Image (cartoon, rainbow, N blue to C red):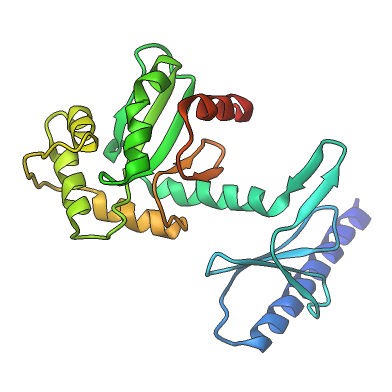
Length: 237
């Protein structure tokens, strides 16, 4: 078995050498570029270089040629976006920082078939439209978990409204009233609104609603409840 251990060691050394070469090539372009990871893409000659900025580039082991953009695989099952799969994994890791006990949750009476995380803004028109269909989603076993993303930022009117919703005795009733355009009693308490907003920015969210499925897939914008339910059924999410 010594020869097998030697082969594993050799492969590891080659991979480390490739990674070092790639890192040197990229930082040689601009020393300010920060590399988060360099990962071999399985069964391809490519390496995925994940930058701290969230961007990804692809290169071969020489580190002399780079491609910026998504990497696709064509197989018998169709076209697969390998870059998006990596993004989903990153989102799931990032979302580990999200405390589920600090979300405003609408749960169905019956068994939960799907869970959907929604980064929302109280004053967003399409967020309100989505919320107006929430009963249909609940009837079909969808649990909606709201996280705060006041688009105007911390300290804005939308931010204050979300704080009032979170601090209300009945958060769900307050959310429904606020999204109907009703004026709520201004409340304050220890709240996660700023943290959730910053987490949304870390995820690359720029608008609302932004929907995140259990598999880490992210959908910017509104979907009608029937389309949304069909999408979740397809994903098994």
